[in-house]
Amino acid sequence: MNKLKRFLGIAWMILTILFAYYCIGVFGIPKLASGKQDDLVFGIVILFVLTPIIVGGLGTFAYYCLIGEYDDEKA
Amino acid sequence: MAKAPKGIWKVIGASSAGTLIEWYDFYIFGSLAAVISTKFFPQDNPTAAFLSTLATFAAGFVVRPFGALVFGRLGDMIGRKYTFMLTLILMGGATFLIGCIPSYETIGFWAPLLVLLLRLLQGLALGGEYGGAATYVAEHAPVNRRGYWTAWIQTTASTGLLFSLIVILITRKSLTAESFDAWGWRVPFWISILMVAISYLIRKGMHESPEFAKAKKEGTLTKNPLKESFGNRYNLKYVLLALFGAAMGQGVIFYTSQFYTQSYLGKVCGLDASQTDSILAIAILVGSPFFVVFGALSDKIGRKAVLLSGMALAVLLYRPVFNEMFQLTQTSTKGTEVQIDTKTSESINANGDKTVKFETLKTFADGTVQTTDSSVVNHIQTQKADTKVSQTVRLNTADEWKMIGYLFVLVLFVTITYGPIAAFLVEMFPVNIRYTSMSLPYHIGNGIFGGLMPTVAVYLVSKSKEAGDPQFYLEGLWYPIILSAICFVIGLIYINSKRNKSIS
Image (cartoon, rainbow over all chains, first blue to last red; front, side, top):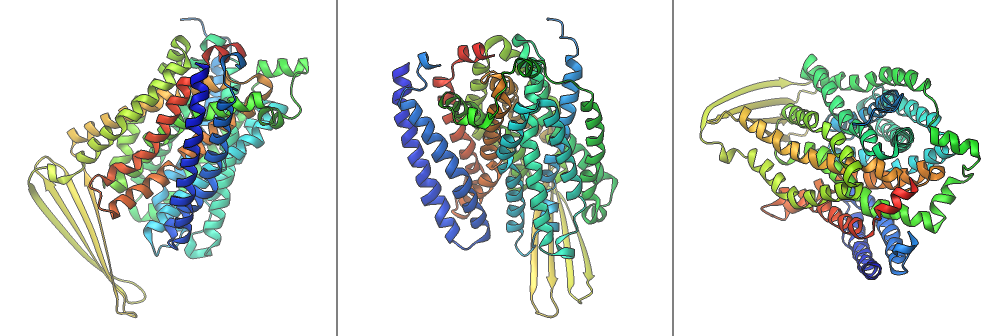
């Protein structure tokens, strides 16, 4: 089980990068630059609220998984 | 069944009443979003006004984690009781004041600015309230019955919404549409101050939680709960696990099933507003006892099993259920039109602009009624004409009950995941940092991931509609489905139920 927990750390890390790409590159910056009011609100929410939580939080979680912080003996 | 501990009902009553009022205060803003958008935001673009309201609503959600930090810290240092009395007063005061703000037409941009500020205060207060109430009840309850007793607090999130819908419904029915639009929408905000006063008096007579009082007596309280919770890797890893393995999925399910459905039925399906409110109210009323059922079940089979089964059901069934709801409101399946009534009215305003309104009522063979309201405004000065068309559907009785059934299923997903969450979070952290540590993941999961759900979903639906996707009405669901699926896998692999039991 510990091996699976650590291995999945790689998956969470990839997911963090994917989320970061979508949040910043696809939804965040293009929406901020579109000039439309509804896009602007959406862009701000995604870029300044969701992105830091997902990238910071999920990234840290992924790192802890990789280094074995969630191993059974460390519970 | 084991006998209830002495005084527990008083604890539940005092905690639940206050939490219910806080939820009521929080929800009336969302439930009146359509009216509020016309009063406080520029009306040139209705979608922008609606989205602005949702964003303000989201702003109320986004600050919730900050409230969790501020009041969680206080709660772990000076006690649960005083902290959640403070949040109650803050919430009640902010709600009452929202009902007093003059409209945008009267004071211009001060109106949306003041609404935004008060909304932020509401979010802060809610961020502090829930963790306090849940911790307070859990610390009074026997360890093997925490799921059952804390589930009573969980019911307030739904009954608060129900209560807000009922108050709005009664106010709407008691007034003409014009009076409600002019000033009646303020009444639900004003009522709040009375309820807060009553709840304050009840809570004032309560004692501090026994576990906190014991820790205080023994001198084991921490001087810096924030540093202890988030600066200590051992605790931080559990805060992250609580967020990504439980609260995130639970939060998006909660707001999809109970809040997005309102927007979905009204904006996407075009269902009549008062029918939407009454359908939702009945489904919540019937579903609410299940919070306690699933809370109690988590005492028997474990919190993890109950929580994760709710997430799995939501992931698998959201699209089919929402699809059925959409199909039920489509007039193409309602048979032939048996009656068509048309009304026309004309009016001229002070500027000389002439408005012609047409109302067409189509009754179908199965009893469904479709209302089409269209208006043409001819502006004298600019020689331009504005045309607006809106269409709503009112379901027949049989379809109305079918819709209640679908919503009940959605509410059931909420009860499965939300019923045991308070006990689950409380048991994850020790008493000296409990208020702070459990509040933050809960409010990020619910306030941010959950609270942003309607905004993100409305956006996804409108974009796929523009792109010509035939199933545009289901696209908003990808957000809760993906987040719940991730949360399910993380919870399944990483949550260690034995560890949580040993902490508690």
